[in-house]
Image 1 (cartoon, rainbow, N blue to C red):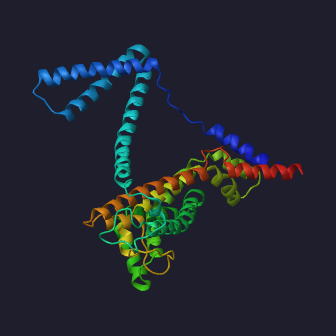
Image 2: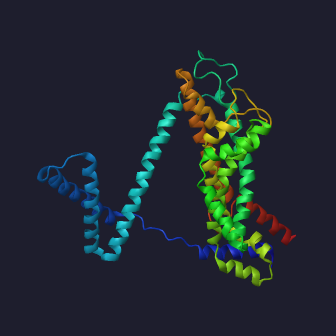
Image 3: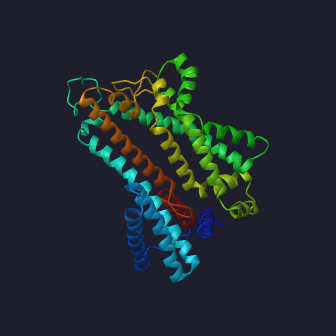
Length: 377
């Protein structure tokens, strides 16, 4: 059996085992009870809340309406389709409401940041630093290229440090185990609760006092914050890999190391990409550890190992406190660029990770075509 056919069979088995349960989409028959329950609940709550009781206040009214709406909707669906369908519709409404409640503040944050930062956003922001800007300069003068480069280098170094260590630790905890698994897991859980300023103080005492402030010290502080997130998420992802895949690989004569390398890790690749995304999200916006480690700079410094360096969170923190309106606008522009940078990094990680188990991304399809060409040659 060739390598390409083995990979294809494993992907098909994984896809069959990992079929996702999806909620049924909302159709006309479901929309009518929702609209009717919402209108009925509004009329009932308005009558009781505004006319029959001395209660008042918008927040209390809408909370009461939502509770009555859920009850009315459950009763209507229960009479039409039974208690099981009513429970399913009720859970769907609650989950949809929770998603909307999370989406609204996120949209407001992103929208307000884009509104405040768009005015001073120019192409020069990505190629210039603050070397020749002063208190009387316009908001469009200068830029944040030095902060963008610093953020990319520091986060990149933190990823190079924390991701291999985190994934290796997760493999040890899930695939190897032993007596050391419990104390290692306890240490990882303890590190998850470390405040970011404590990580900065630790690197400041160990590195900065000896070698001075630089971008590498900031990367070490960020890696301390990223490591527990990557480890815990990777461990959970590895637990979700079906045991049948491990057993099939071992039955074919593969060693435990080769099973982990060729079966477990490729199957868990999308989840591991998610672990990297969560680790980057944990570290890329941190400011407290950078205050003690990188020093900050108004000019470009592309060497993270020598001299002070800037970063976008530090850039925003420093400029937002200036009294000049131009500096404040530059700070909002830096915040907008930071949001865009996070989005770009997440998209890249998702493309590399793939869509899910059994999905062949562009790199794997190209590799499979090469294997097929070698087989037919």
